[in-house]
Length: 336
Ligand code: SF4
Image (cartoon, rainbow, N blue to C red; front, side, top):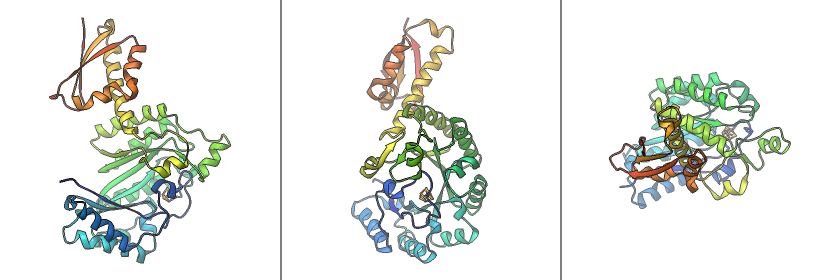
């Protein structure tokens, strides 16, 4: 039976300032006030849809969940906990800001059955955090993460690439510092310029240049490798596709299949590395590549991008599907 996490957006209510990149209405597609009745209705819809809710979570995303009025927060949590305490859902997930975590807050979350906490870290550079009006420091991320883990919650960390004032090196350092905090999961979002945000003003005045799609794909394919090597699950890469996001998009590396572009780039890099880092391999121009059939489209690339890139390198490849190949691997053999 299919799992179905129930996602409830609680927009803007707990935000102390407006971060440079955020127009939360555009991201969530929602600017109405969520009620406890909405929480129950969403959970009931998941049951009615025949999903395996006992393996699913009720998730409160958007805003700064632990910064909303305490009575309002506990009213939403108690509606969700009514389902979790009966074993009808596995747990409750919330997302919030690193500076809105304290022992008191964690005690409340525990009481209402919260199991996972995601922090919007965004960057581990204080300069970048300040330029983007985040209102917290990298140390806040470290302190909150340690407190969350020592209280037995699952920890998720979110980071952004290409923020105003950042660079690939800073983003890689951010990923490394997040890895040091040993989160259970991460989400990685390349920065997109949205209408009606401070970042839009910086972009229009020429003060800020977003990453190109190709640059973001290159960087994020590197980040995937870092997180994979550390055995940290990436649960989201790139913003969700939505009509409201499309209508408020101004600039930046948005693509509805961003993760697939990155995974495809990883395969291209692997093939190039195999061929060009070895004097013997370099002598050939045709290669047979064995790959799991589920990865053929990634090896070929969107619109055959990888095939075309390799052609520019003077390389021709012949794909050999092999369902016993592990998903992350390729076997490359020169055709003599
Ligand atoms: S990024 Fe998060 S903290 Fe900043 S304004 Fe948006 S919802 Fe609030």
